[in-house]
Image (tube, rainbow, N blue to C red; front, side):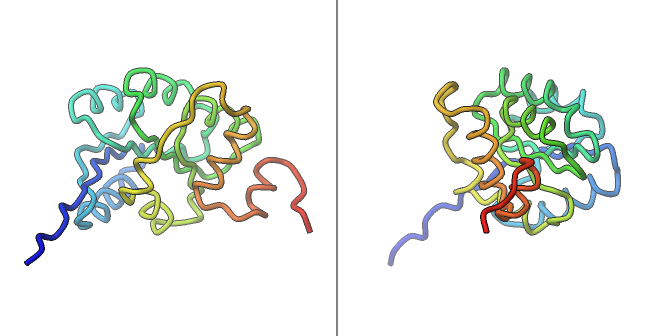
Amino acid sequence: MAVPPARVTVRVVVQSSRRLLRDTLSACLAIRPDITVVGKVAEADGILALCELRQPDVVILDAGPRLGEIAVLVGELMRRFPQLNVIVSYRSATEQDLAAACRAGVTSLVPESHGLTALITLLRPSKARHARTTPGSLTDREVEIVVLTASGHSVGEMAALLGISPLT
């Protein structure tokens, strides 16, 4: 009799200043057999200490309407934990916000409108552990496009977020 393959579990930390979102997201993720929520925190400034303590594979950051403000935090996370995958949920974004998030090292960007299914898709072990690009190997614009594509955005959404017109 063949032995079933070992299940890979993705260790996740959730950050949101919105308690209902933080608790609901954590509860929804915790019931999945391939995801282990190892911590949750309200304020973004507590995420570094939590990552040091719990050693997650993935951090989910809730930027809400402040996507442009999290680039410094993401940069510090990537400096301290280079193998960490950072998924950012956001309400709205400008082209400059997207560029700053991509340069900082965000793995995936998920608009709040895409819901929990989009987030869970990005947390699957094969998706959550993809290889990072070597700095300098892609232009900033190429990194933005790769991040948006990996995040599941449609061509029309990517064009709107990048401030360009989609091909017809």
